[in-house]
Amino acid sequence: MSKEYNYSGTVDTSTAAGRPLALFVPGTVYYAQVYGDRFRFEGVPAGRLPLRCLAANGWVHAMPDSLGVKDGAKGKFDFELPGTFTPGARLDSLEIPPAYPTLAPPTATPPGQFAFTDSVVITLAATYAAEIHYTLDGSTPDLGSKKYTGPIVLKSSGTLKAMANQTGFNRSPISVNNYVLVPAMPKASPPGGTFTDSVKVELKAPPGAIIRYTLDGNDPTQNSPTYATGGLIFRATTTLKASTEVAGLGISRILTETYVVLPDTGAASQ
Figure 1: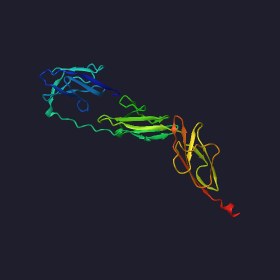
Figure 2: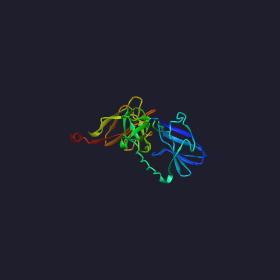
Figure 3: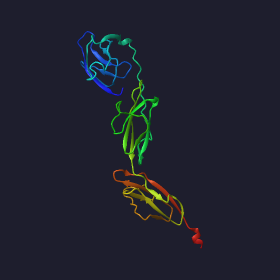
Figure 4: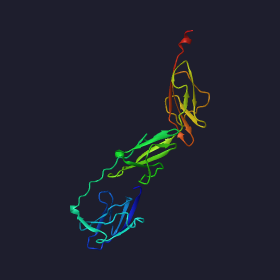
């Protein structure tokens, strides 16, 4: 059952069988109230499904054929009471099936909001080994959406929406995870460590990227100094924070390196 259908139609309300109140598929959550003589089913799975009609006189009437068969291509139905339906059990003797449990939404690893560079591999999991359907364009997934069969590789930003489906359960709520492609962090050479007297640090980033940095422990912003060639010279212990900015990709995660600079005691004693 990979598709869903909407069905609409009319029920004869002029017979002695009693005014129709609702139509339902036994053992499922699908039902349609009758307004006047018209009804509409929303989002019923494709396939042969039995149909019952609850009348105002308390009788439940059974349709001898299945939903999706009569004029199923157009989703239009016309029923008469009695006639198309046959009398069934009275309402007060009908055993109402228990409500179906609802599946938990699928979980994603890594979960969003998640920033990545180059690419990210995402796995999805659902309880009870339920099948998972997902979208990457922000639309709401349904049974016609792509079925999850293995890890998803993203190389650009995307919103992953997923839902779980399993016979005997209500569909899960939709999980939403956002994945954002960002520039790679700048690289510091040398990396943080302990040095004597002073240290010269150079920052590198992909061509065309802007590097912004701070030396006071605060995160860099668009108002922070822009790094130029030539390097930074530290003569005292300093925490360097730097990020890369690329047009169209935004700002990278923040690089943090601490440089501990000790006095050159050997030079002072000579």
